[in-house]
Amino acid sequence: MKKIYSFWGRFPSLYSVQDIITFLGRAKTIRSRAVRKIGLRKGDKVLEVACGSGRNFPHLVKAVSKDGFILGFDYSQEMLNAAKQLSKQNNWNNIKLVQGDAAQLKITENNFNGVLSILGISAIPGWEKALHRSYSVLRQRGKLVVCDARLFTGFLNLLNPLVKVIYSKFAAWDPSKNIPEKMKEIFGNVEVENLNLGTFFIAVSVKKRK
Image (cartoon, rainbow, N blue to C red; front, side):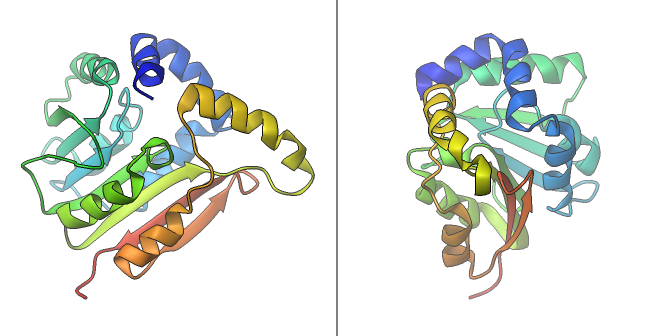
């Protein structure tokens, strides 16, 4: 996993190309939709787990404005270097970047209004712990939004063996993880929207008092 994302971090332009393929040409639409589901307002605090090269930052910055705070967390320092460069180019001064293991999620901040992860949880070895940590750093009524991919269903499932080989090798993707079910177990609730012929989903859980 480390080698894979170190490579993408060194070549963010190539990462942009694979983004187009992965999202079937709807990357901007799906990414912005996932951010909107958090329900962020100006001045809010949001954490992005596995932020990568910062491809969701434009949507997050728009949502929280310059008065808000964005913490980008990623395992790959190369990815964070690319995210830092993107932030610098756009004069986004309200973004903090932290390197580390999402299963530990060692950060000093908490009481986030929202936590976002797009195509990240499925690639994290300790993904269940990462979801638990996401729950712990949210404030009451805060939302966790996870957008990730699934294998094809129907007649397109003939492509699944090839898809699994390619994305497991080049993106550390593990489609066997039932992310929405684990979110429901941790939060007690989950709402799921399916997109791109069922190959993408956006799952939303709200932190409520237990």
